[in-house]
Image 1 (cartoon, one colour):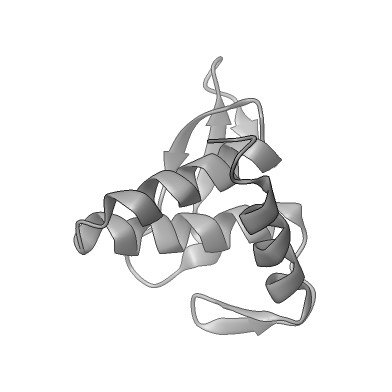
Image 2 (cartoon, helix red, strand yellow):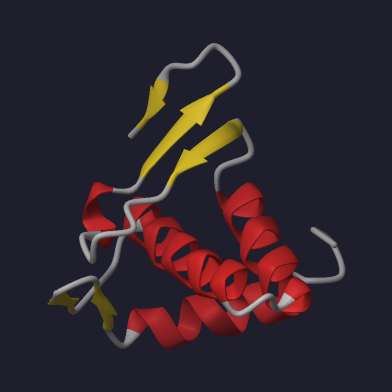
Length: 94
């Protein structure tokens, strides 16, 4: 999925480069961490709508951009910028 999804991930990056709504704020140039927060927000939506294809794609995007990620704590209260990523040592990835 990581290799096969790369063309889609590049398109996502291109789309995000033009700016993106991150929770309640618009970010004109999302950095890598913010892009993963955006993908995590979409992952949460995929979980709620029971969309396995989107769920897997968003998880793979996050893993492709943050290869050390082991856990994602998605903020589900509309504050996507408070979504956190952790490595296998339970250390925060920033």
